[in-house]
Length: 469
Image (cartoon, helix red, strand yellow):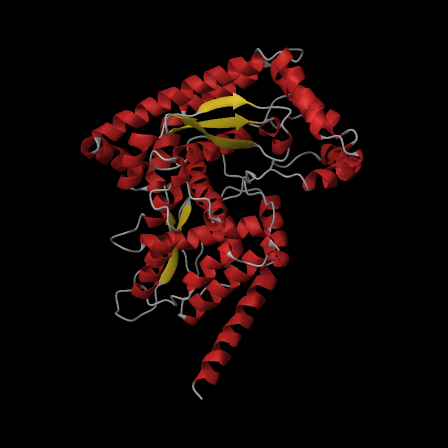
């Protein structure tokens, strides 16, 4: 989750991690039900691609009838695109334009309140001591001996470091505030749905942003969004956790990591749900898994565009595991398929935010889009497999199998994908560190994925051949 570090510092960190490994093994069984924020990049896919600073997956419809479609990459957000989009919304949807401006100002105020909360936080207060007691009461098992002390010390160390140099925290907050207009409009531009915008006006309120420490559920998270209940409308709460602030040897925390995290969580907050009834929130496994992929697709492009204005800002590609990475890839493929249609292109955006609360409806629209593109509609069953894979298989391997099946069927539809496409979608025209790309290569197992695709292609061909007799 962090950028390159000096070798000595890295060695010291690795030695410390070895000592803490027994505690972390215990804690792994107590992981939160909330999905971890993986600051991984927006993943796009393609055989041939077009040059651009930030490349977003698109489907190119061939001029010749019956010819196969082609996956290409094009610049996601540019000055011209964003300016034209903003002017169009101001002209045609003035109510939303006023709403998003109020939203931006509210988030700015919340960032100021977060600064005050951090700098005024009393480590000896009754509230802090109560949180410590609650944490210790949960971690009473022998295997957890010392773990509560570790978590408490981690939270205290974060607050103390921030208090040491308050000007750094204030400077980083000012950077965020000065760029919130670009960030917010970039998020809205990437979702590109009038229905979603109308829903946000009616039901989405600006988030509260709070510091959260001494929380067992959040040790391995950087931040999270919780929906608060207030008269049936969504007033999201963004919890900023100790790991959001990654410090260097000068007690200065990583601005780039912080910006990536805040943007990711703001996307969650803007898409917390739809309608007045809380039961409308989609709780299916498929929605929970792909929601993170959709969110990071948007975040990666917004950060990438922001980096064109500020050299010290760039997307972070970090890997929690094959399962998480593949969620991002699947979300990118689905988005490109839906966006290839003149009508219903925002289906995934509406499903993401909860306007479409029925997985079957979304999958039926996916089936329609696949047929129009002359692609194998059984890809729908592969996607639906996210809801019902065998837990004994494990999430990482289940998602890997699903991805291989989909890519094999695309290949059989004459959609030619380069053997190196997984690396290309991460690294092509991206401002990334080499170690990030290398880490992705190791985790995703490029050669193994390609072997799996070819094996699945042969299997499908054999089944089709046997079916003729």
